Image (cartoon, rainbow, N blue to C red; front, top):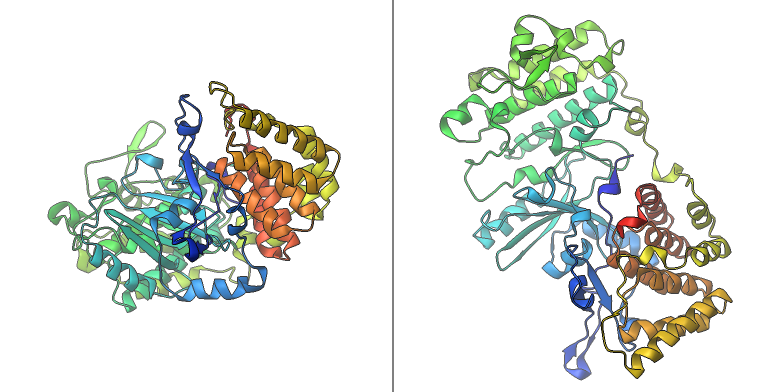
Length: 543
């Protein structure tokens, strides 16, 4: 299972869930406040979004309808959507740093975030830099064309957004990380030989499919572009099909790995894509990012000596080129064939390189363990077989609401440190005194298990906007579950995660609410995410 702890979902999207009161002549909406605004002058570098919902607006935020969930998923998989910027802000918690999943984090020119839509669909959002697509019409037309590509080897593009100078793509989310993560940063569980061959075969099949559809240009093919879905199957990112509005003249990968013709002309070509596939073959074989030999950059070091891939191939020094973890997992002739194929892809002259169809034909005989599922080869657990390891996780999976109540009561408000604001520098008014009295009474009723009264008291305090607290929403969420109101419980759990994107309690309560709504698949996903977040939770960070 991939490292999703680097970013948590902020999964509440208010756009489309907020009813318009036509009789009032205006749209009802949630009020979004920056943490720095509500901290009354205190500094906060983390741009979280908080929600303040008045009494007459509270009922407008609706959780997903369990009965229509399957219909929604089919619709999203077959229809191109035009998202608003507000929808994508809500899905990613205001493009929170915690939700960044792309290489180089927020320093990258184009940043990819993970998020969730209002129907629980997980998404990846690519936010381009503001100069990449100056022509909005061209951007949308290109996105529509890419969304029409349908292959199990290719991540599906489901929509886009263009507002002012913002350009964003929205795709299905692949939860089990990138090939780069598994090759270069997974020392405890490196990929097996059979899985590595499956990866390169499926990437080759994706390239063959794209070529057949007239999409032979793919930008920056590298291990970060290969993603693993929920079942561990490798897929090629669709984001590489839309780099910028330039006509094949962009290439941002390290020039040590660029095709030699690109260094001369600055053009991205179909033959250059085959060259990049050759570098991918070397990455898979070596477990390292070794540059070819058609440039002056050298950065592969072994025993104090510098090497480049083609030098090792020419010297038939295959052992130095091979990941030591793979020892005993392959026949020498299989490795030799893979090296030979890489060498053909890395030919200096573009016309001497193979095409995508011949890549597939060469790799199929090498892929032996066809019958073994990808998740078995990768050693990851499916959501359906996931078993939580902590008391709270077990309580949520069993829907033991009494045990959840005991845990929340024992926890108190300690996880609010660094997140909740108590407005200590603001002049106290009679209304504020009354508001905090309602919170105190709500805590008392929560302790005494009078959950209906606790809901009323917490709602009064939340509506007053005196303090923004994820724990308050968590307590009211459980109270709604106790009162058999799972839709309201899910909404409050979502609110808690909007305030604190990496707080595991919010994800656990979402799982409990989804179980109550009979949405077992979504509940298991939320439970799995919560378990990972809990393992990485550091309450002293306040996040």
